[in-house]
Length: 278
Length: 192
Image (cartoon, rainbow over all chains, first blue to last red; front, side, top):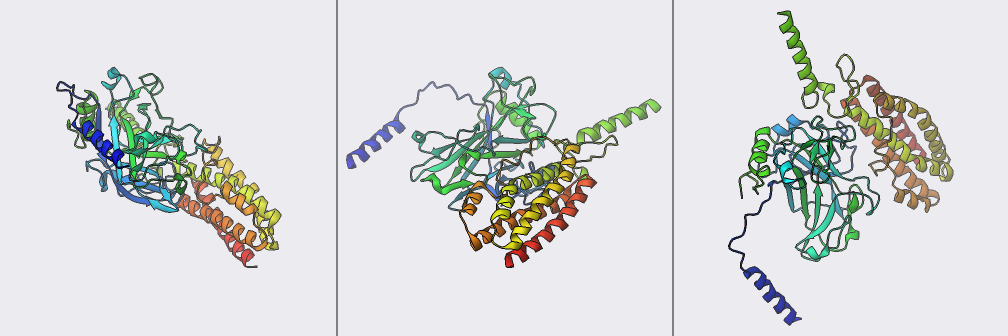
């Protein structure tokens, strides 16, 4: 036992000490991000049930502090936010996670805006996400882990556990994490649609389909919950782990979004929360 | 001059049409996807109307097995009678709902039927209820019916406050009265 511990420590040191190639290329990643901790919980959904407070299952809101059933773009632009950068007034929400019936809020909530998913020449003409755009990702209506959904669960610092559509058993000391990629092709016309999905699409073979010709940054939601262990204790307000979904109501000021798309996304440069090369 | 005026008018109409997606403070007309605009430019059905009509209809669909089970199995006679009456009232009342859904262009598949939303008895709720007998069955039935009726009242009040189409808001007002009366009836039936 002690020898194993010693060995793994030595191995760990080796990995850390391994010299990096001196002539490494700078990482080419088209990215900027916003860290937006938990703000509040409400059984509201201004996209799916606008004007109907209490109509929804419980949601945990990140970013904007003012979101409720009645929220419109100006409410967000004029409201406070939990985000770093503070210029991001967007609202993001997911069904609340419960452990043994008690709500658990994430410890780390990061929204990456990425160029990946389309060819480099398509990345070069990515357009800013328009103010007021609403996007929904994941499948709240999934009835089982075999149902189609793009959302994935995994463990932070325990990559060997692997990703799954349903909750996974994370080793003690690690965190349960949820990954969700939003569609990145816009029809160029509608900020929302009757089913809240059909104005957006996922790319096909590295390009946006002709029905949704405008490439926009891909939003990747990464949420880390301070829980681990037996997933039978967990449920989402919308049901099993496979019902994980995310809602995004864009309220980046247009100039801030434009600058990041111009300086980070199109030239394929990794930027931080401030939208400067990191 | 006339030409310029006409051009300006056209431009302002265009701006108004474009602003429909993001503008603020247009009262009941504030809207995004799926809004139906009449020939006069006034929104008839707004997204609140559509969401409310669909969710109300979905709540009824999901309550059907509960009402059938209660009509069949409730020990208390008044609870049984109430379940029968609610079942019949829904059949009649849903015509109005569905007419409005059709008028709003949302007569197709209901997106909310497959969700477990607040107020809906879940499959697990119904399985557990089937295993109960006598007073325990009636007590649990009363809880599930109350959750269903209270949610109907809650969202109908939301529609009254934020709906766009006058017909839909009138229906919501009627339904608030109807379901509030049913809740009072349920209280009496459970106490009996």
